[in-house]
Amino acid sequence: MRYTPRMANRARLIEITDGFAGTPVALVGDLVLDRFILGTPKRISREAPVIILRHDGQLDIPGGAANAAANLAALGLAVTAVGAVGDDEPGLALARALAERGVDTGSLVRVPDYRTPTKVRILGGGASSLKHQVARYDIEDELPAAGPWADQLAARAARIAATSRAAAVSDYGYGCVSPGLVGDLRQAIGDGAICLDSRYRIAGFAGVDGATPNLEELEVAVGRRLADDEAVAAAAEELRDRLGARFLLATRGNRGMTLATVDGEIAHIPVFGGDQVADVTGAGDTVLAVLTAALAAGATPLEGAELANIAAGLVVMKLGTATVTAAELRLALARGEA
Figure (cartoon, helix red, strand yellow):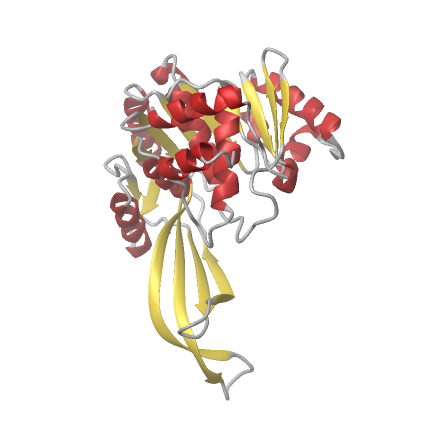
């Protein structure tokens, strides 16, 4: 089922998308490197029942909060990433990948003895066929609870937020984001919007303007199973109220999204794009980025949710960790596909 906004609203959504260009925003969160090792199968090993691949190349792509930053840059915003990376090769590769995509990396904090979170996927396939993932391993560290790095990061986040129209906060649980840091952002950004995506502890971040839990995260936050639209709407309003937020946007996979606002508005937004799904990797990062971009450009929460829903539908049609551009959003709207 396709989502069709009101005809009068389509022109407004294009206007908001046009307003992305050059708008300053901050991205604060847990930066991850998605590394893809590409190979061509040679034979089965004599040492073990595994495929031997001939190494063809390597792709380094921003993941986690870094993927949200890359999405913001792809949309045309002036985005500065604030986060921690290790003083290691993956940290250098991640900073380079962000810079290549137009993200300002001058506010990254390098932390000695911290291994940059890296998700390494090994893909194999023939030269004329799609490569499929055959193995994956993760390099994961948690940042120390305190130290010079934390003070540096808080200072840089506040400085960037003070000149930003909105801030996206992406918490993947590696220790970069804390409720105290969000409180500092709230003071620094003034009337600017703060949008939160937190994988494990969303209920602890009071003071944000909006949050984007998926269905599982929402169920954990309210402590119960959510079986239908009515239950999701009630839970979204409950969590929104607990956070003191203006709105909460629950993402529900092939059931679309549910928006609850401080004005008592509940909107169930059907999924965009039907069942044309290639890869859901990073779709939540895209939702966070587009919603933040829309609010920075003056959108209402419902308008931001409409654009985020379209962007999510577009990005899941792409393989791997991907981004959506403003041009793609405009084209979907102009064609009447959204």
